Image 1 (cartoon, rainbow, N blue to C red):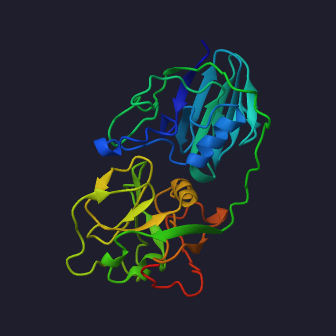
Image 2 (image 1 turned 120 degrees about the vertical axis):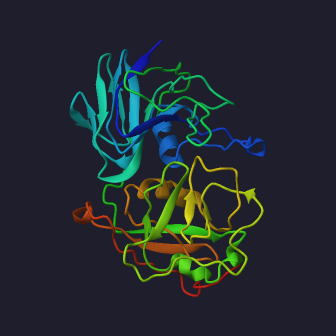
Length: 329
């Protein structure tokens, strides 16, 4: 059977697929790829089903060697992909010959890359999924140097496209979509969620992105109405924005818990969650949030490449006319 050997993992790498839906009532989260669209694209480029298992690499540094010819593709964060030291295209299928090595540089934008090989990564499934769940510990352990991963049998049709359009510009302004959450009325000033600058906190991971105001900012944290900071545990959805008593929101990603006892004041649309999983790349990155109201196009002012070492960056928001402060539909 074809296999690949992990020569280096970078800061963090796991096996991921589309997760294990349908077990939330048992306390088991779905998990799966943090950027679901990039995972699906990587699989399509090599002719896998979109649910096939891939490697999710965080902040580059992944290096693997294959022992047989295999078709591979890397998607996600803007990183240089090298085959035997020679740059290859991102979001493009590449044939790896037996003994070839493939390596990811650290991304210049984004956080997570997805390496798919035709046939999928064939580790033992748990509850129908090969995903590593960092919260519950289900699934395979995070990858380590020396791991040997089997590649499954490729049963599908050969892919019809060898590459996909890739946006290498990454403009300073990106537009996200947000919807009001079930507990938006628990905030004293709901519009404060979409005002000013939020930055990624140091304890952000695959479970969620904790955001805070920039150091020295005069912009407010979120405030609850009297007695509205806690409630009985309720279900939490992918992309939920929960606000604990500290007033520092948490945006829940793939490994989120299935319940929580703080108000969910907003929920990001699916595409916005994928972008958040990439955009919260480094501590101090500006993070997308949104106003409470109907679906809102939100203009987020990204930092430029020349600011890439800054710990904090300004964010400017341009809500749709008439949406500011609207607490419900």
